[in-house]
Length: 289
Image 1 (cartoon, rainbow, N blue to C red):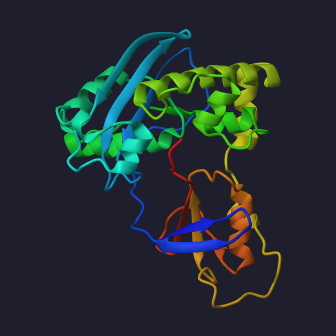
Image 2: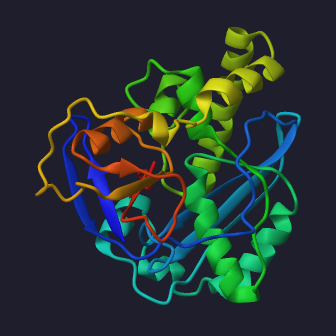
Image 3: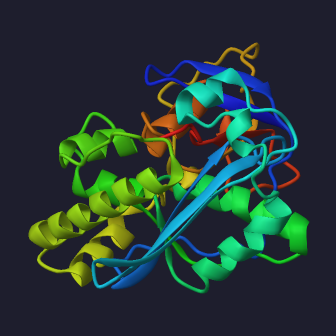
């Protein structure tokens, strides 16, 4: 299995990658603006749940636009926190030296979250880490449905240069001081989520209309079979020639249809779902927000 990067200009690069992990019991991604939910955010030592560790767990419970409870704890990792992560988050090895282990604190965190719908920014990243760690610690699945602010912001604010949490916060004039710490990011996410809800109502008249429009046009329901090559001559030396590519996740700078077009334009094929015939898995960005 390989990882592929497609630039906005259509340049394609590849690198080796392990088989994608299947999380069979993971909750569903939904589009909604519930009156009660939990906003969560985690900080980690890196981007890959297989190799990296959670170093902070934070969440706030919101009912009728009022924060009614909160949870936040540092987590002591097995390996040291590197200078890049410390520079990004401000979390040092000294700060986590006496923090609880993930085995001790994660069950408490999940008890706080309960069965609530989750709200987060690029929240797949957080949920995958929580899911994998919970399975390893207790053989239980993290099954909560979740709402991704990133998806909603792209639909409500398509004119923004990007939809990172910092960009959204600056657009809504939400204070970003202390960003990249769990509780601060929870509060920023919640404020931006509420602003996006108001915009959705303004633009689409009501929440139900927004959900219906999003369901029809906002999901990445591009049919692979409908993508045709713009040319008929290909270089057999290209690494994607005659190879089956499958897309997953959200692409930050390139529409999925355009990325799929890049693949077929060099003689590749776009598949639906991972199978034995899949040669490349193309994954949306999991970078920090």
